[in-house]
Amino acid sequence: MQRILSEKAYKEAVKYIPGGVNSPVRALKSVGEAPLFVSKADGVTLTDVDGNLFTDFCLSWGVFILGHNHPQVNRAVKAAVDLGTSYGIPTLQETQLAKLLVESVPSLEKVRFVSSGTEAVMSAIRVARGFTKRNIIIKFDGNYHGHADHLLVAAGSGVATLNGSSSSGIPNDFTKYTLSLPYNDIETVKAVFEKQGDEIAAVILEPVAANMGVVVPSPEFLTGLRQLTLQYGALLIFDEVITGFRLALGGAQQRFGITPDLSTFGKIIGGGFPAAAFGGRADIMDMLAPEGSVYQAGTLSGNPIAMASGIQTLQLLSQPDFYTNLETRSNAFIAELSEIIKGKDIVLNHIGSMFTLFFSDHEIRNFEDVKRSDTERFAKFFRALLAQNIYFSPSAFEANFISAAHTDLQLEQTLQTIKRVLTLI
Image 1 (cartoon, rainbow, N blue to C red):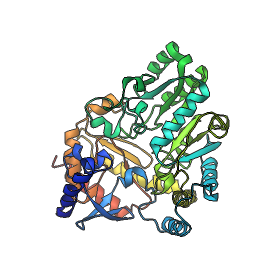
Image 2: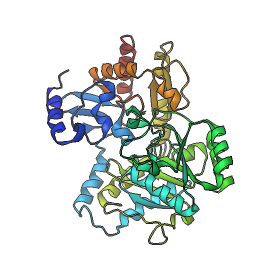
Image 3: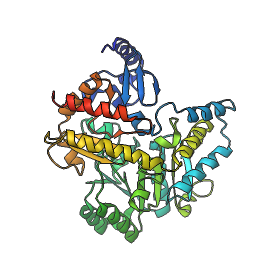
Image 4: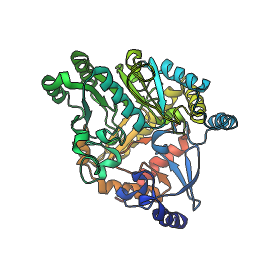
């Protein structure tokens, strides 16, 4: 496979863009590859600038549960563009999408739109601190909640490949109120609450970790967090930027039957456009200006193009049996994949249509387990798949996704390719 034009494009990009990319993991450094430059996408097929076709399991990091370039979403977007692309003034579409979110997600009474997951989480934490009048935030090692200064503490995702647990350029004072604890370890959380419970504003977590690869919580972990936060008057925040509208119409909270106080959403709700949201109980959300004293704003928040895309996407996801059908296909794929990796020191973590292959001989329950996996072997695996025109998420610390657009044939061909590749690495 030739990627001459992608290599040329990368050399040009690094002249003008730091690292040649606008989000670090796209550089593919952790897997020892030069980045792809994509010219178009359709369904689950990516086409690079050299004309190579790839079956996509990254799906813009989980955005395209319907597949790329969905015709109904595209029609809605094109119609919206003809009416103007930004107003900085309220639109009916904002209320329509907000209503769809509130009707779909069990914990939501009110929501506010922003343009990125980072904004959504940053704002939710500000509201939590304003509501509780406390400062400390508990997060979990390997959970990534965007790149706000106070949250880059033992973060997963692309940050996991940096030297250190955080980022340079962040004063220690910015993170002194952020405690990062081991994921899936409720006893440690209990011990912290016993010592500092009256200072803790909120606990935030990915209800299914997906930025250190897929790590599923134990039932007692989620129920324990809910009980502790209620007991001590802290808020529970679910970061559902990835799991929202991925694991169910009502997200992970519906799937696990846990009701958080606040939740954050992104990716799928924009249908491919920059849209995110945070929301929860009305009494908490009413702390926001102009009702309350917590300030948050954004010129492009509730952008009409992103709202049109999100409305159409959520309406399609609301169709009967959408999630049942997606899960049936995903479960069949996972069952075959489980057979393929038997005896090969590979752990398959999965839930719904999300999965990660960890090159490891031990169970993966937290970030320490993840860091002990063989990232060099993963890099070889990724490169071998890429050479066979299959694009997995390009990091050992990320999730892969199955969409409604993956055909049975594409899934079966992928399984057979994985089977061949694993004999070579």
